[in-house]
Image (cartoon, rainbow, N blue to C red; front, side, top):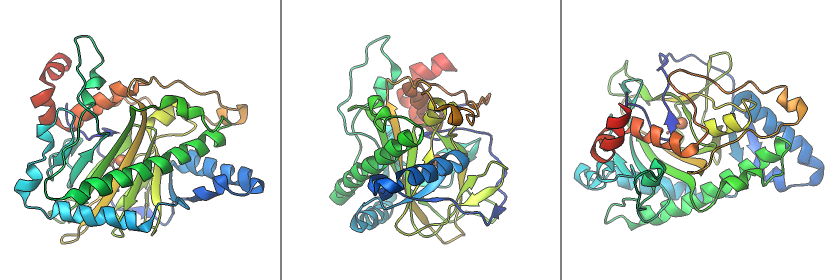
Length: 357
Ligand SMILES: O=C(O)CCC(=O)C(=O)O
Ligand SMILES: [Fe+2]
């Protein structure tokens, strides 16, 4: 019941059969958004098509320095090379806010362990006092856990997080414009407590030939996710016809995908696309750094008014019995964290777990 993953919603695990087609994800040069005015409507049409038809696309032209994208992988390698006891010194079991290190096999999708280890990092805040009757999401606010002896992990991650926030907000502004809104439309849903989250992830090679679930099929629950991946590959995206498309690594790009809050805001003109990671072969490891952008934890996302031609393409919000969508983002986030990290939930959220069953 409480098994799942964080920053994403649980779905029935689809059998992982490797039948990706030769189709490729679209590629968006985000610098065109601030480029020549004559190109603006062509750019917005390209972005709209990519977001509406696939919900997953590569972003280039983002201006994130190469030294930062290679730097984050370098510190990731150093972190995961630390002795297990050093990684466990920052285990997320020590954090009521679900921050810190999760060992391989301690997250589940649909009852199957995801074969990856990770470090979860959120906005650096002091713990909030949460009185009786106050919203539960306030308990998600607090500090991160950083391993001693690796100061570059903190500085590089926070620098990377700031750039990921800049790029993802620029993509969100371009999407607002592509949806016929003022480009600042989504800005009203942010403030200091806008929900951002970084995961630094290592996928070890598969433990057996027939065990290849790096992460089972799921949707991300915020507005957008923006992912930096290395050159190993394994991320796959589900197409409308049910087939799987390889998100083949494109050097220098980020992969961006639509989350459930944008599906609600657009009544399904944009949809949160299901995706999964197939484990690398035995002996090969893969690194990725996903970044999740959500609205403020107290935001209740409302449908925006789409121009008539786009409204005609709105498919409605998916209604899956096992994954009811909450327009109140903080509720979505709490449910996601409790489900994804049952051990943390039992230790720090026992009152809520007991109440919800
Ligand atoms: O590592 C990846 O490529 C994707 C990870 C992912 O989808 C997630 O953590 O939500
Ligand atoms: Fe995801």
